[in-house]
Length: 113
Image 1 (cartoon, rainbow, N blue to C red):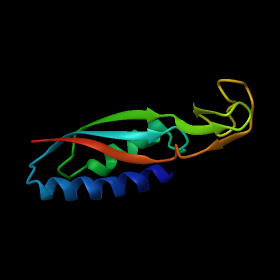
Image 2: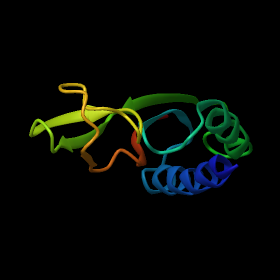
Image 3: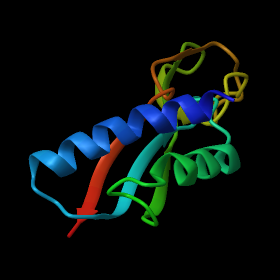
C-alpha cells in the first residue's frame, strides 16, 4: 500500500510547516489528488489517520479535491480533461490523446491553531 508511504511523507511536511509557523495544532488538511495518481481514497484516508497519530495533526480533518488530467486530442485538436488513462476524448470519442499530468498529490491548504 503506497498510500501509507505517501501519508508519512505528507506528515513530515505538515509537521515542518506547523513548526515553522508556531502552530499548536493542525485541524484540517486539503489535498489535491490527480485523477491519474493511482491513489485509493479509502487507503489514503486510513493511512492519513494512522500517520497523524501522536502528531500536531492528530484528529484533523482531511479534505480531498480530485482534479482531472489535462490532455490534448490529436484527432480533434482540442484540449480536454480525462479521468482515466484509457479514456476517450470527451469531444470526439477518439483515443489519440496526449495526457499531460494528472498524477500528482499535493497539500494545498492547512488549517492550524
